[in-house]
Image (cartoon, rainbow, N blue to C red; front, side, top):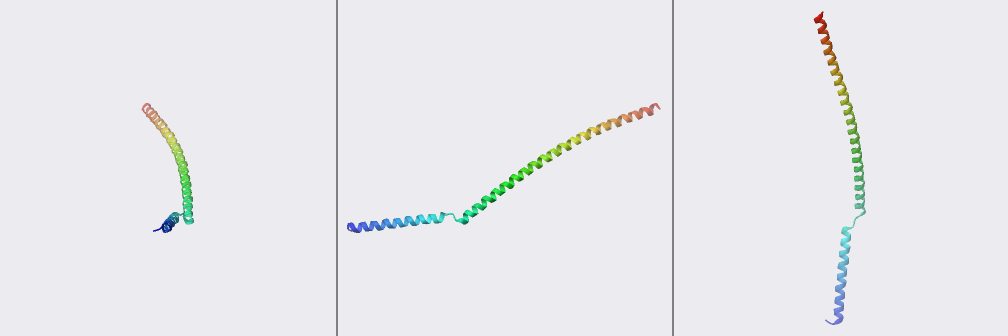
Length: 109
């Protein structure tokens, strides 16, 4: 093999290597490329996630408001119960005093 054939063989080998590298690069970019449909799907999923987070935040706020309202209502009911129990205690004490008074009046009379 003379010098000219060696240069031609080397050029052909380098050209084939270049073509294989270019093809591999094209193939990798073709397989890993994100299509418009994929971008649209990602955008739709991002919007859905944002809406779900908004709904979650609204639900949490509603539950906190409802819990506060129920706690206030419970406190009011407990206060009414305490007042009613105090009134019942006073009525029982008054009824006991009246019974004692009536028994004393009957005993003296």
